[in-house]
Amino acid sequence: MAKKNEEPWHCLSVHQPWAWAIITGAKDVENRSWLSNYKGRLHIHAARTERDDTVVEEVIEQVARHLRIPVAAAREYYQRHRERGFGAIIGSVRMRGCATSWDSEWHDPEQYGFVLTDAQPLDTPIPCKGRRRIFKFTPP
Image (cartoon, rainbow, N blue to C red):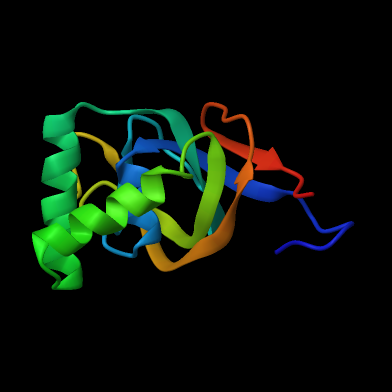
């Protein structure tokens, strides 16, 4: 957790279930239509909305494959997470850069891929209003 007078965090809003997939360490690329030169610790803000059930199930299956766990276990993991994972910063990753080509099942070659490593979920999500692009947030 952050300490008083800490530098503001760089944050990125991501819809669920992708925000969850990122902080599990399974999703190593976040696709965006815009380029960013940012490199460093990036906090993941789970947006207030979730995609439809078909998308959620597809992401759960991808996370299960990546983590090498049964789909039922990944589904349960997501359900526990989603009870508290909306409209809040839920963890952080290290953004290594922005790629136009990346060998990952998550990368859309039509978009810029934010390359992500070192996922660290927060024990307690921090409520926060999301914004577009990479934004700064001063932790409590």
